[in-house]
Amino acid sequence: MNFSSEQPKIIVVGSSSIDLVLETEKLPLPNETVLAVNSDSYFGGKGANQAVGTSRLGASVYFIGCVGMDPLGQQIMRNLVSENVNVGFVHETDQEATGTAYVTTCNGNAAIVVVPAANKYLNKSHIDEADKYFHSSDLVLVQLEVSMEVVEYAVQKAKRYGKKVGLYASPAMRVRDEVLASVDFIVAKSSELYIIFGEERREEVLTKYFNKVFVRDDTNSTIYFDGTEMKYYRNDKDKTVYKMGMGDAFTSGFAIALCHGNTIEDCVKFGNEVSSRVSGGKGSQTGLPRISDFLS
Ligand SMILES: OC[C@H]1O[C@H](O)[C@H](O)[C@@H]1O
Image 1 (cartoon, rainbow, N blue to C red):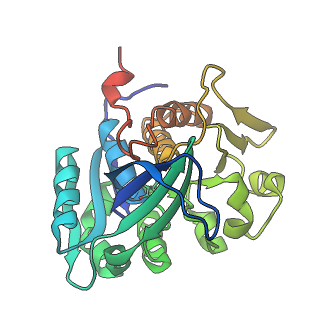
Image 2: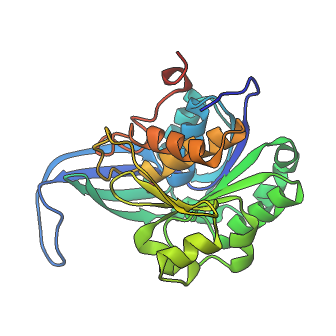
């Protein structure tokens, strides 16, 4: 993994939320009541997680998102500022409260329910306001917790300016083929390929989108097709099991490595390295590493 002397310029378009994380000894089944052994709140939302992830890894980051006019929205703003993320394009709406997510975790597994709320109010004009920053950015990151219309509009704008685009296709939903074709890399979960691509067979998806679709599973491993063979990457020493926020962390690491001109293989390795540090039960952003952790 090489770090060039240029600071990557990244725009993240997406959600922000406050995550209420409940730790339990078993995940509740339908109609079942269980007791939490711990509960706490953390900063989250896939967009904000990736903004913080890439900022900690040394990028200059603009986050385009929407929060409510409430104390949670203010907390999110302050957190982003403290993480050196530019919040000039974080909008406030009086239509809805700030987004929240309700997370039940047990032995590394997590069940997440997201309440988009204010995140739904991000619109195309918000993307247009940041036009000149799209023009000067290196890479744009999107996920699927804001409206698909906004995601598609941001992708179109970035591609019009010849920028790289990364899509973390979560929460899983069908993405139009034109969008899949125009982004540069897509991070997806193995179990969700059918929903996103309309194709169930992992090999079909990976072969069609070689060097472009990176399939993640719950053991922090990544699979992709390099045009010749299937590549499976997992650090042998890494005993990581699923932790909340891993996908955002992988996407952040991959994006940073790509901006620094690394090979796809090195982008995958760096993404895995970054995602293995996420703390999960302590929130999606807590364990995200800093660039200083990698420069010795
Ligand atoms: O990807 C992890 C995130 O998903 C949900 O959006 C939660 O906010 C959590 O932080």
